Image 1 (cartoon, rainbow, N blue to C red):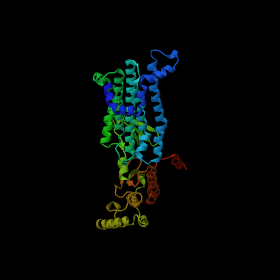
Image 2 (tube, one colour; image 1 turned 30 degrees about the vertical axis):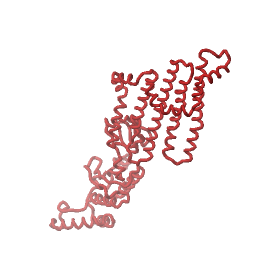
Image 3 (cartoon, rainbow, N blue to C red; image 1 turned 180 degrees about the vertical axis):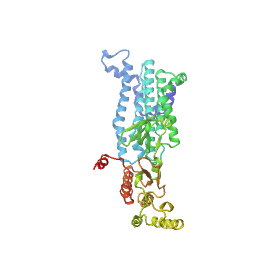
Image 4 (cartoon, rainbow, N blue to C red; image 1 turned 120 degrees about the vertical axis):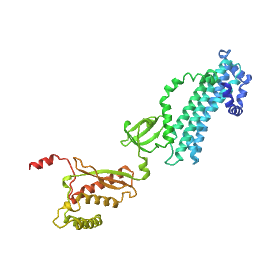
Length: 441
C-alpha cells in the first residue's frame, strides 16, 4: 500500500521538500542535539531526541497550516472579489483550492518523519501510515469539491431543458469515497488494496442487501434521465405519494416535489419506474392549458325558440351569421317538406334554444382574446343525467400560469351562466331549502 501512495504523491512530496529546505537541516543531529541540550536534565532521556524531532515536524506543519488557513485562503477570497470569473467563484464556493492546499502540511509530516533521528521504525511507520490515510481522505474531499463544482457550472451554463446530472454526480462521489475508504483501511493495516478486494466477492450478497434501494434508484435515475421523463421544474402528479407540484430536485435516491400548498413530497427515485405519474411538461411546451368543464342545463327548459326570440337574438353580432344561415336552411327545408302552414313542428325544422346557445358559446370562444385558435375547440352535449344535460366546453387558453388560467376560466363561465337565461335556458341546481319554502307560499 505504501509504495502505491508514495509513487502517486512523489512529485508533490519532492516539490514540497524542496520548498521547505529547512526540514533537511532539522534532520541533522547537531540541530536536534542543540535543542536537547537546552532542556533541563530531567527532561532528557532515551526518547528525548525523537520527541524533539517529532515536535519540530509537527510545529512546522502547524505553522504552514496556519499560513494557508489565515493568509493564502484569505488571499484567494480577495482575488475572487477582484475578478468576474464564474468558474473561480464556483470552485471557491465549494472549497476546492482550500481543501487541496491542506494536503501540504500532511506532506511535510510525511517527509519530515524520515528526517527525525533515532526514531523507532514501528512508530515512524504507524505515523506515516496514519498521515497517508489522512492524505487519501483529503484527496477524496478534493474530488468531492471538484464534482460539486462541475455540477454547479453545468447548472449555470445550460438551458432550461437541461438533463439533470445530480444523480450521476452523487454516484461518482459514492465511488470516490468507497475507494478512499478502501485505501485508508489498506494504509492503516499496511496491506495491499487487493487484499481487501478479494473479500468483497464473499460479502457481495450483504452489499446488495444494504445498497438495494441505492442500486434500484441508480437504474431508475438513468432511465428517467435518458428518456427525459422528468426534469427539475416539471409539474408532476403522483397521487400514490400525495405529490402534486413542481420538481425541485432530482437526486440519486430521492426526488423532491414542492406541492402547491408549499409542502414537500419526498419520493424514492426507483418508485418512478414502479408507479405511474403524470407530467404536465407537454402543456407548458404548447403554451396553452385546457379547459374542460360542463354547464348542466335544466332539461325542462329546453324548447324551440319563438320567432320573436329568433329576431331578438339575430341582433347579436355573434349569432347574426349563424341565425341567417340556419333560418335560410330551415325555410328551404320546410317549404319543400311542409304541405301547409298548419303542419306541426314534427313535420319540419326549427331552431332550439339549446342549439342556438351552443352556437353562441362556440362563437364566443372563437372571439375570446385568450383562447388558442390553433388547438382543439368544441362545445358538445354529453349524455343527459339526473342532473340535466351537460353542455361541455372544451378549449385551450393561451397561458399555463395557474392564477391566470383560473381567472380566464372563471370569466368564461361567469358569462355563460349569466347569458343562458337570454336563450330561455335554466341552469340545473339541486333543490335547496329556499326552493322547498317557496312551494309552501
